[in-house]
Amino acid sequence: TCQCPSNTSGDGFLKTAKFTDEHPAPASFKGGTSCIDTSKPVISLQGPNPKVFKVCACGGLDGVMSSSSDSDEDKELQTEQRKLYETDIKHMIRNTAGAELCATHDHPRPSPSDCIRAFDHTYK
Image 1 (cartoon, rainbow, N blue to C red):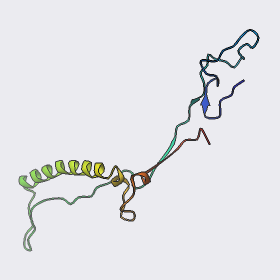
Image 2: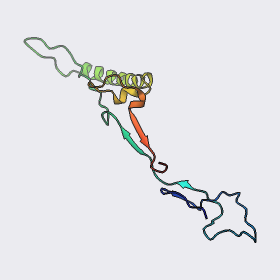
Image 3: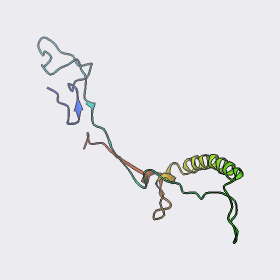
């Protein structure tokens, strides 16, 4: 008989398996379902999760004797700048093939392949 390894399911036979009266199908034959991987890969992310992009708040200039107020113009400026941040972040991620997402001050230039590790337990 055929047996599937751990972390798989099925009867272990191909659909094309042929049996005869002289050599009948074993009791474990379920139509040739083969062996199907049932385990989920283990995925580990390197770097911060989620990545946080810190930006300064925009506003008017502060003087020595007075500070700027929260004017409507400042709020408009903030809204417009936030729209640009999304475009900038997408551009950074595309240009680095995703490596920007795992870059840190301690590891500022990672390779994209350093950002994620995947391991499948099925076949060792």
